[in-house]
Amino acid sequence: MTAISSAEASATPSRRPRLLHPDPMVRRLANITMVNTVGNGLLMTLSALFFTRVLGFGAAQVGLGLTAAGLCGVLASIPAGRAADRWGTRRVLISLVLLDGVCTAAYAVVHQFALFVLLACVGTAADRGSSAVRNALYAEVLPADRRVAGRAYLRVVTNVGLGIGTVVAGLALQADTREAYVTAIVADAVSFALVAVMFARLLPGALAVASAAGAPATAGAAPAERGNPALRNLPFVTVTVLNAVLGLQFAVVEIGVPLWIAKYTDAPRLMVAGSLIVNMVFVVALQVRATKGTEQPGAAARIFARGGLLVALACVVEGLAHGLPAWAAAVLVAAGIGFQALGEVYSQAAGWALSYDLAGEGAHGSYQGVFNAGMSASLMLGPALVTTVVISNGLLGWSMLAAVFAVAGLAMGPAVRWARGRMAPTV
Image (cartoon, rainbow, N blue to C red):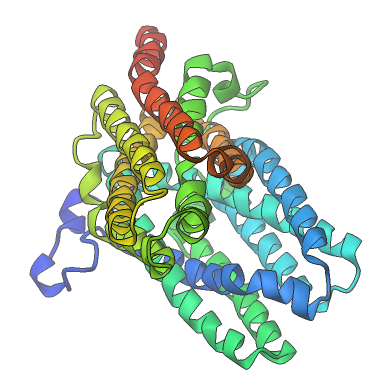
């Protein structure tokens, strides 16, 4: 299977709206991403109220169930990636997407808490596993020099899709009836079915040939080998850990900053919503541009360090807002939000580049599975860390977190040099 050629990707640009990507393959992936994330936006917005108000579970029960589900998501990424190398990314990805959709649909009829936890665990495992396999798919269908820019464009689409899903979910929230919530849940489940069909139609000729031959539907499937090559690659694992550490910034922007504004500063409460909006705008406007310069691992490591230092600066600035007059607190909070958003787009772009450039060709599923597991662990642990260690200790807590981000960013350079040195003999 070959990716769309550069000539075809750049054909007739003058006839295409500027917001559409010039590469036909990226546009097809963007359509899939849009359908998927609109559905995700529905569930993300409604899930807490649906589980408590409609299904009748207590908040503590829901928290326990979702924590268990988060752990399952961490554990699922690595075997899912390995499975993609063995049996083909499309086959594994379609199976996981359909499984996620079935679990989502089942929420509408669940009544027992044990069954709710089971569905949450299986659904989250399928979701995180499909994320790892999807990233491996990008390595298959996009040329190496366009993978990172393509992922950046898809992240922009992700933010737009989540925003649309959130707005549509607002209709269900306004109605506040069981029927409205269930309709939204079923709509999300249907979106998974559509996504599975769209993945099945992605380069269907190559998929059919591979299936007829009984081989994995993948362009670069590695021959079966014992063990996971990514887990044996200690430098790559180190890069994964550093990226996961910087991934704690998502808990900062989604939980830490809103709580800090509302409870510990005199900044206008309107800035709670504004912080999330500003972050989304920065991602949409700058994420693709931030990928420039990440083509070489050494340069990507420097961009990652820049992102880490910006996020560290954001933490210090946010911490200084405590105890200041409202106008001064608002200025510092706004500055911190801006620094964090800039750091996020840089660190994300660099992390994607390194996850591909330092991976063994033909084993992208295994490497993306490990890399995705690190980020999943960060997303699971981040909220507890930010609320119990950072927020409760005020400026000291913010400063400690800033130091962690700065060290992780600066350590990426040596880690990448170590990884490249390990790869050198085989190049």
